[in-house]
Length: 293
Image: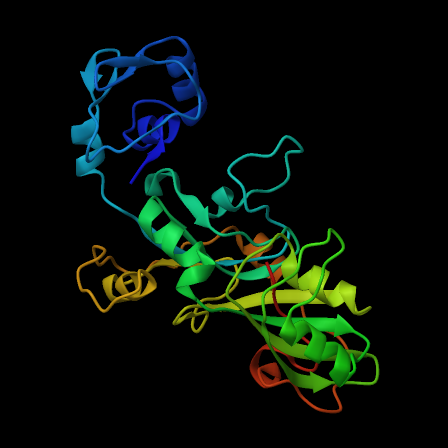
């Protein structure tokens, strides 16, 4: 699979991605004997010979072990590897020993829930491509109680404020009070802050969001702020098949941010529901919400 050279160099452990860009512009990277100086140039390590300062990096790339991690992201963390505003990053929730991982899709700063981190571009492309129909399931708490006509508009696909139209989505009511409603939303695509923007388009802003499932992988047994390795079977199914051995089995980890961060993330929700949401008894009490991206 073709990948940007700076990423391949970083994946091989030669340099950070920023330093890799400097190596490229300095003319110290070649592909099949040709000097490359243009950033954004792509290469396929299974087909192309890639050298940095005259040394072939293909063996390091071939020996690299793929890592697949599932995080239950708390609110207040940015799904990014860097931020000029110095906001908390999801990378702070992992030990450095995991190496450089990238997020599979995104969750916005104020959204909780499941996020896969990996160094496997194949899995990333499969899970995020709408054509592969990998379900992303969210729980949403919204302001007010939308009418059935408004919910039907969301199901059919709705035009957002920038003129784009969303694909059809599955939207199911799971509870309501006089002032709020809860929904389960299933998407197969992933636009920026899509669920928030969808409900804004029908006049009901999202108050809380959480992603609870990616494909067949759920948040069961994984507290906010904690992470674990995906099993080989989970990886194989996320790639679209029942293949075995897609990832090396590792012990489950309970690694997490500090108790203070995890504690803040587990905030209790307010309000008494006249009709309890489906997941309310264990997680919301009377009004916990869930997520979008």
